[in-house]
Image (cartoon, rainbow, N blue to C red; front, side, top):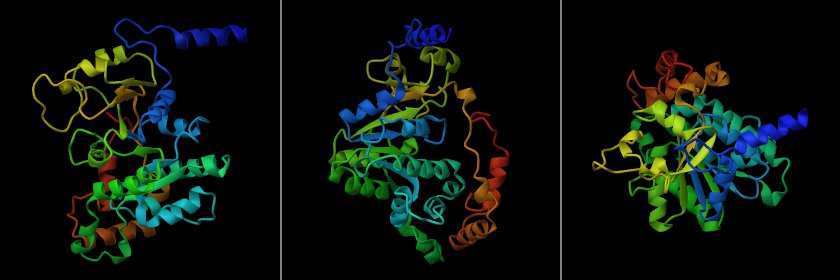
Length: 328
């Protein structure tokens, strides 16, 4: 009976997709890792939505194929601390790496709490040559020295910091990296984002993956065409690439008739948009009164407006009105 069920499951997974869907695809982890055969960087958006990133890092194929993970929520000034922690060292408090960035929302992230701990654990099973390095890419701000808005100014160009880290720590060393950032930093469409800047010097270095968060129209019909999940669908040569750009949540106007998702190479479908969950806040951060006091000091120092999320009370108020579901 067990053998029958196993065979049935295998046949179900390998069955031909329904009419209108792409041809049978490899599993998304294999498809992503295959992109490293031709690219130094695979850049993925919205890492905090869905379990894909954690499952990928647990995949035994990941170490050895990928040397580095470059992250948005990490202070470059604290890279030695991050290296020590992910290398298995005794680090009493690693949270400063993501709490002491230029982005207050990073400090309440459960994703980064879990990501760094997971990489540390995976590294305990790997020989030195296969250990994964996590690279912080946010500017090297020292909040203890920020007392006025002018003190913050040198640290506002986040893309410049990302570019510097990727060039010096990945590309110039001939390494392979997974980048985890918001899509605005990643599209290679000639704009001012980090990947676009990197590719002026290293053309074609990155393979950019956008996460599905819902089509702007006809969402239910198009999700049925995507079929089963998870799935990683290349844009070039697929029905997704033939869609008009207006179906995708792009940030700027494109000429009528433009097709595909500009600056994106592939589309990750982790399930219907209505079923995606919002990242919960970190209870450790919310209950850390010393940290909340420090956030209020920072907000005061930079003259943050009362309705700015630099103030924890404003941030929490916004979260209270947000649903558990991403589109709720």
